[in-house]
Length: 154
Image 1 (cartoon, rainbow, N blue to C red):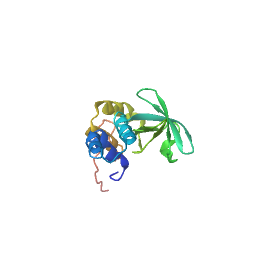
Image 2: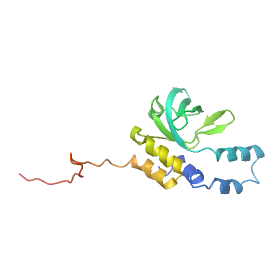
Image 3: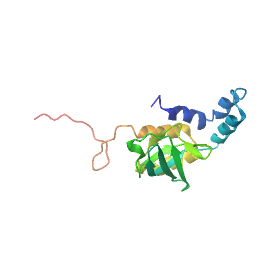
């Protein structure tokens, strides 16, 4: 994940380095790009459900607001099938949306936790939540105690 565009976007947006990044480039950017970057700072990451797909685009429903958007220039992959849950921050470019930082798949049991973490705007909690999806599962017995490996010799 270290090379994923999501990481740099979390640093810029959730860690609030966007303004400093933009300030350092104001003299080299045209006015329309400055305006676009300022607009992007207002867009927060959220949880989406994929409603439909077509070549190069997906239609998403924001689970927090119910808003529908279409994101273009998206690669076709298994996580972008209808019904899939995604965390992302699609950014407006004119009348369309692009997902420059990509999307991460989200398990259905983590939707409420993800919405809560995203509402709190805590980058550490967000990364912990996303990382938890890649952790090995814990095996527990029927009483809820963690299973311990035991060597049995017959």
